[in-house]
Image (cartoon, rainbow, N blue to C red; front, side, top):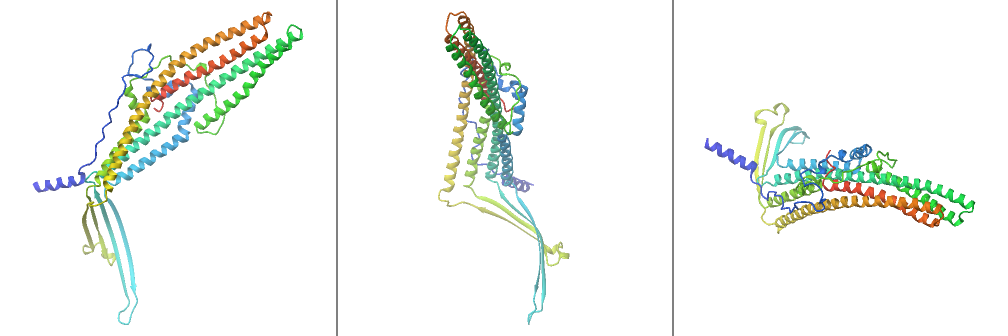
Length: 464
């Protein structure tokens, strides 16, 4: 009984063995207690974050949601990333198969006729064989288990890489769509301004015909009209090019893009919850991918160290062999063989040691890349928080500036019609008002793009 237990224990030891190389342990991370750039007037920090929200709840424009849905299913970068996941899955299957024995079946049949000679009559011979062969390299030192661990981590890194592609795509689609809406707003401002300036030119021409003003005022009024008219073709070019960009992002050929809400109809909250910095490590797909790459590099050290130890392999073959098919499966026709082999490296001119050093250096590179990715993520969140808050402040001031410029135009026209001032004052105030409207539209855009960047930097957008 004790002997049987020893045999079972030895068999289990041969099957499982030990695993050389370091086990993975997450590196020390110096995470801040709070993000820099938080609004000092905001409520106390909580675990809630805007990045926990699905992208279709953050971007509540149905047309934008339709574009993102289409992009996720059709965008070429997303589809390429999906094929990389399939490749990593296949590679894991290839690597994991090395842990198990390989079994092959074979069958052969041959017939030979020897011609008659002076001393030997003609003869016919035949040989038939059916066999199974087994080859198994025991993973006693964990070489194949470490390789499988590395391949599994590479698969997870690839899957997180696919999520990172979607993560960036959602942000790029939203930003591009808001830029298109801002160009639409500029186009509407330019057309309204052109119509207003044409009416002003008509009134100035009437006054010039009546002799109450000079042709100088007419020419100055024409400058305003031509300036607004020249702005329209430039905007039409930018709008069509922006539509082409969005078309490519969603996986279509260049074509017009349907709009939903206007830029001003899309509202975001004045303050958004950022959550805790520690949760950023689990939420951002680029950080998750970097950690899986680190795990894969760490496992490769074990693969390299296992090469120091002997390779233990087993081989076996069994089957039937007979000169006649009718006797192939009879007792005397059976055969078998079983063997084992041990191979120990003795001299490799430092190759094994150099390979271990190589994998250790690659692991250290992966550690630094992982830590760098985290540090860069903290910076992106801080920049986005600052940008969103300051863009809101800038937009508020630009609204006041635009209101003041609008009233200045009204007063300048009153003064001109009353003969108090020249048309040059109207020209200057109208130009300032037009520029203020364009700047306000761009400020509205910057505020919305800043929110998209904040949502992205916090790790939101890839959740489906």
